[in-house]
Image 1 (cartoon, rainbow, N blue to C red):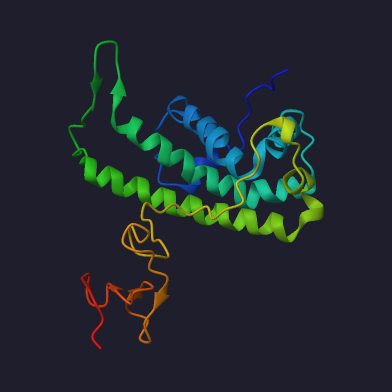
Image 2: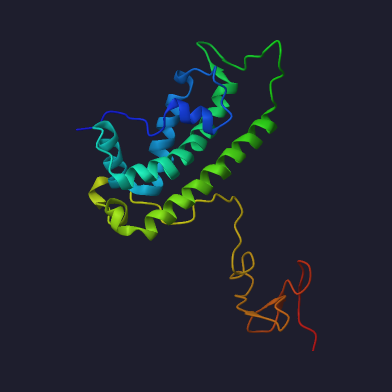
Length: 213
């Protein structure tokens, strides 16, 4: 049976821990707290531990260890994940026939570029608290068995990788190195890549040449 939806952070903490103004309605924030819990938190702690937390919060039986994690790491991360999710929809409103961006007579609306900047700031803060959360649970495995040894039948397993997001890919070999001859060794100055025929890739600033004898 599905558990009733619960919130891991209060409206008071959400507004005191972020720049959300007190006049913002909770109804405009709750959907994004729930999304953040279900998307980001469950991704990093796994479905087994996620469902355990939901049940304990719902039944008011939160353990000391889980309370510590909620107060010091999970809540802080969720405040910023939720704000990141909410920001576009605080600027844009969906109505019956259109999507509008309401304006104020006393303030100017921000640009899309400025909005994206704010989103990335929230993402960076949320990722920092998420990393600390993962480190704490990893260093105290006896306190969080549902995270350390999850039940695969419960669904999503914990994401054990780095919580920091980066859109850049930095391969260990040059781009298309196999097609260009399988460059596998470096020169003495650690500048260029050489293949078995001693042809060099990137000996200088992004150019291809044969080595000089």
